[in-house]
Image (cartoon, rainbow, N blue to C red; front, top):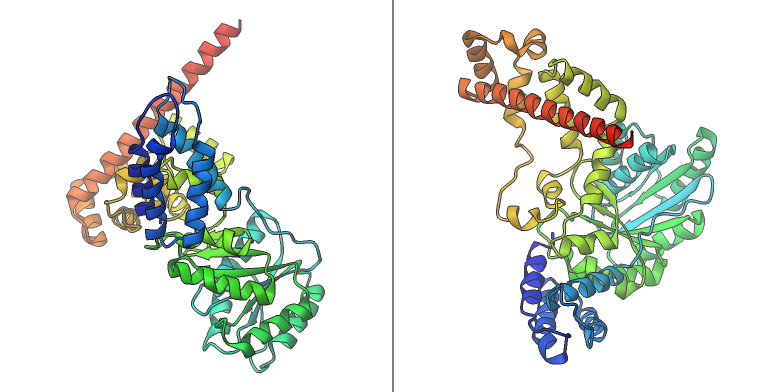
Length: 442
């Protein structure tokens, strides 16, 4: 997402020349190009114009220090205005009641059901909540079954009444059930509806009136572009929702919805969906998104994802094994699984400052680890624990079992050896650094 917009804004900022101060003359061409880039990204016209006008107002007359160029100062101003455009601050959800009720709304196909499952998993694992998923989509075939499958995956109970065709009644009964069963968050998955369908809009408004939710979230597919903004306006006029959820941000989307929706409906974007996995959900951080649009990466989010998957006890265990040269293929496989849980590989790489442009034309497949996993899984427990016993005949058997070649097996052995050497060098350097620090203190 935002790759084309990032490139266009980057080129636009490089147009800015001059010394001393930013003037109307030297900024005009840059802002004209930025506005065109925003419109091409499907940003609402009024939003694009207001944005560039605001940047111009903030930029004109700004003195440029000798140590920086006008374009560098403009980057700072554009970053600040992009952050403000997308809401300025991170907006989480506010769950006051017990049980707290979250009502999901949106168009059919926007990803409401999947997101409901992701949100339940996040609340359970990060907030220590006990969520209950409620199937109130009585129209879409297999909607109830889909929610049950998701519930099983994340070990969250699902309340449903397959024979009941009254979503208001189902929602009310679910809340009663939640109170009895000890669930403290009720997430109600409703049917997708068109904003122009009066009967369906009346129905979800009735559900809201009956259950009085703590939060009404509007789920929208980021790939729908400007249509997403128009739909949000219609839903907001009927439901007065508290926040927006953007799904499919990992897809081939121009990003206009993320940049427009906050200004048009004056409601914050609260969450984003960044993939199909149940872990692929993030709080929306306007400042971090501005960083990514301007090619600065998002190292904070990358570190946060890593911290979620890697715990200190596991790190200490691995450190001891590495120190004793006992890091084996079981550990290697475990680390691959942890990395995969962090999300889409290209998305992760793009969070590293400067990497976005470098990898934009590369096809980084999420199956990049597939051959490695196949090779390790074709080994016996003894071979995984002690790679030194791998003879030529063993390698041939493993290659045949994994659908690879002995060259691939040897390559993986070399990778394991290099990984062990590199980490041992880093550990030794870190230990030396600590020793030097202690000497200085003395």
